[in-house]
Length: 181
Image 1 (cartoon, helix red, strand yellow):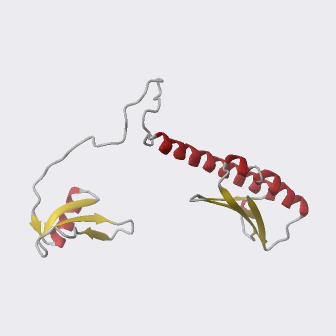
Image 2: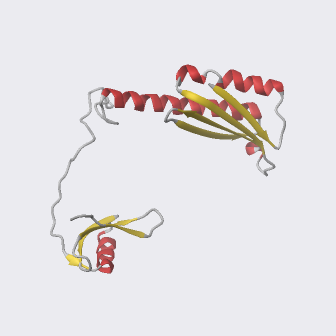
């Protein structure tokens, strides 16, 4: 694993460099496929003294990219926080990877509060049927808004095909049209 340390608006002392190497050098034990770890340190002139130093860590591996950023008044505190966040991310990544290898789905067969095994949460739990009506896109938008849904299935009167109207994150609308049908 290659550890690259860079700084902006400041100089890195040898003791800070060795501290980072000691703290982040252990990551290859927990994530052996990590090819490189980039650490960037910034010193910002902010009004808030709690956000004076910024430390960013990016772990690149085979198919894995983990990024963490922390701010603190003290450089060593910011480094410790980044190491803690990165360790949590690695633990989460390894658990997710192990779950995939074992063939289980996230949230499936995990013990609930009383210690009993919970029912699987993934899968179809409800089937809803309704008549698909022919209408223009503007009417579909009105119907979707009236129902308070984030999507609406309708038969587009302009194309004669079934369309899925959905609300995008930017509060605009999108339409999914099937091809070859």
